[in-house]
Image 1 (spheres, rainbow, N blue to C red):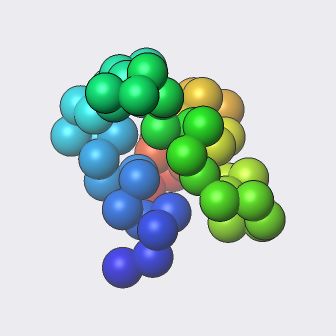
Image 2 (cartoon, rainbow, N blue to C red):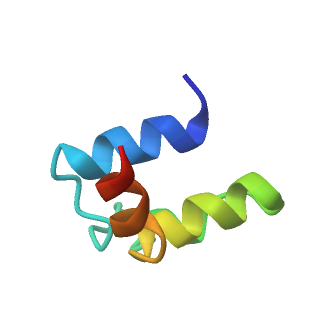
Amino acid sequence: MTQVDAVKLLMRRGADPSSKNLENEQPAQLVAEGPVGDQVRRILKGKGYQARSAAQ
């Protein structure tokens, strides 16, 4: 399972991408830079997730 797959699974299961940790950080703020990170951020922000989940 890739990081992108894991994020998609968590989102399908109801994860809240706007939740914050004890340092007041949201998941999108903790994602590493790079192409995979960009894809994960798009999913967390809701862009591309609905289109992809409908296709699956």
